[in-house]
Length: 192
Ligand code: S6P
Ligand code: ZN
Image (tube, rainbow, N blue to C red; front, side, top):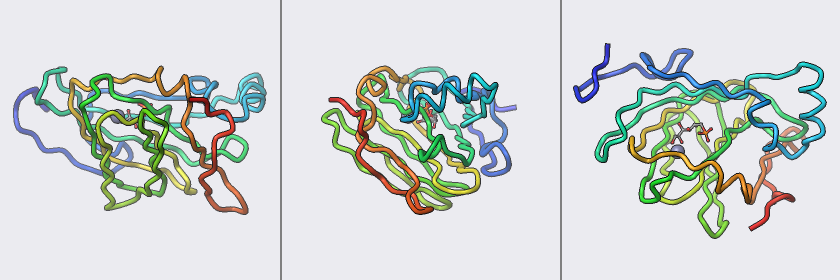
């Protein structure tokens, strides 16, 4: 058993990305209904009782105290809503000075990183790739592959999550399939 404040080691990989973990969060289509471009399709799927798991987060959280780190993993399942690949909600950290590091474990995808002015960068993630997320940027992960995308994350435990700010504007880009390949396009519903 891992105890707060004491040194620990854990294992990366397997079905949950990290083991052991303490908290599991599951996000289904119904939790993300306003997020995908094709809202009609989402409503149609939900009304037919189709509510797939889009992603799961496994975490070993610490108390929200400056200097401590949370570690976790995210598993995004392969799939699309229309042409749009499955993704995470995306968030800024409430404490704007906090950054984060992701390390790819399995599968392939893109991390969208957007600053307060709406400037956006997309970076590939996959096994043995580290992605650095600077302070005060919103981040969303997208599974562009045909298998699970799994990555490890470490971030200050007092960072907090602000989902509302980025939900209001949306991300400036979307990741969609065109001719069988992932393409990053301007988001027609983005508003600054
Ligand atoms: C936490 C870190 C990740 C995400 C996870 C799910 O700061 O960035 O653990 O929480 O990838 O994404 P979201 O946007 O639903 O929290
Ligand atoms: Zn984060």
